[in-house]
Every structure is written in C-alpha cells, then in structure tokens.
Amino acid sequence: MNVRLNDETATLNFGERLGRLLRSGDIVLLSGPFGSGKTTLARGIARGLGIERWRGSPSFTLIYEYAGPDATRLVHADLYRVASDTDASQIGLLDAMDERTITIIEWPDAIRTALPLNRIEVELTYRGRARAAHLRARGRLCESSLRELLR
Image (cartoon, rainbow, N blue to C red; front, side):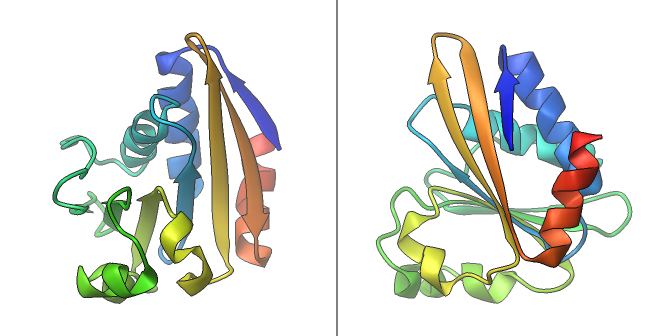
C-alpha cells in the first residue's frame, strides 16, 4: 500500500489514523532517510492513541515510554545508534515489547530479524516537502489493520 503525504500535516494526520487502528501488541517499524518523516509519523500515531504529551524522538535516550488514556502503553524507540539485536536487548527494548504494548521503532534494520513477524513496516521517502509512505503488513492481525486504514 502506498500513500502520498503532501506535507507535515498530512503525515501527522495519517499517523493519527493509523494510531487509532493499532491494538496492544502491535509493532510498527519506521524506515527511511533523515528528514523523511519518521518522527512526525510516530507523533501522529501517538496522537491517535490519545497521547498528548509528546517528547520527540528518543535519539539519545533510545526509548521513550508513554501511557495512553485507556491504559494503552506506547514504547517509541530510535535505534539509529544501535548496532545489533544484542544492543537492543541490553537497552531493554525487546523486554518492553509485550502483548500490552504498542511499539514504534525508528531505524529498525539492526534488529529486524529479532522482531516478531506480526508487524507493520512503513518505508518513508520524500522529495521536497512531499513524502510518500509504503506500508507492508506482516501477519494476519496487521493485514486487517491496513485494510481498515484504506477505508
């Protein structure tokens, strides 16, 4: 599934729609070059989950955790500085991912093979201010979420 995102507002709005469809246990992987909108999309997802106090990208702390209004737990990780799944385990990410948590991972390549197959992968690209998102669902539950998003 490909989605054109004309500007930052469109990226936020799309993330918000996606966030409203996510359920505990879902994992969203965000890939793309610097400036492609990964953190903006993550902020939109958090809004869709009802999380208002956004702290930005956890570039240096690596992981931020949020509590949503309905006891939803969101873990947002930025793995740009993480080299392997062993590193991800050492910072607690793999332990934080459970059936009660929605997890968003920016720069997931170093740990992709250690992650569950049931996930949504988003590859972001951009040209000028316009962005595009290519979404791919892995697993039955994630496929139904993407079908709902297309409606």
